[in-house]
Image (cartoon, rainbow over the protein chains, first blue to last red):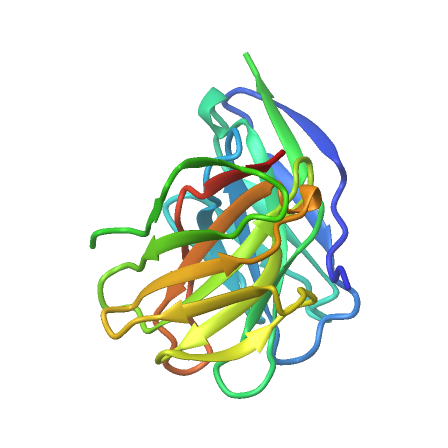
Length: 113
Length: 114
């Protein structure tokens, strides 16, 4: 029951912005979008999340389209340490307090010198 | 913040055996969930505990069970291990109050079933 679609891989030049797209066309109105990244099968690292509005923090920006069917994660100045698998995730709500994260296949971002 | 810690980091078991994996949630978090990540795949939701009660479960058989303790530590138990249970098992904790919250993941336990 994957709810997100991402390109399997992307390249980015060091120092440039990395723009990672995600489609979530079946998302429901109360379902949040999360982005995590994973390096060498370590635990996923939180990047950012949002519901409707664009969000920005010290790591990245999240741009969500008005219809909420897609979003883009922006890493403003990619470094070699940003090389990782990036997951776009939808949190699906169940009964009270049963939100579960539905991961897709992820995008492998390779930052090159 | 103490983060989320999992133990052990690596484990090898024989098919048919039972295994217990442990997770210590981030301080103050009231919810813990477990995920299974097969090699090359995204993590899949196993189940979630909120205030010591299981309140959500993914498509996993009953031989996957868990516990959450008053100090918000948690266990994942798997009985009758199968070769396909070989995976990275991830624990994630969160403080659920309202709809807007994040998850902190541990580094995982790598289980190999032979």
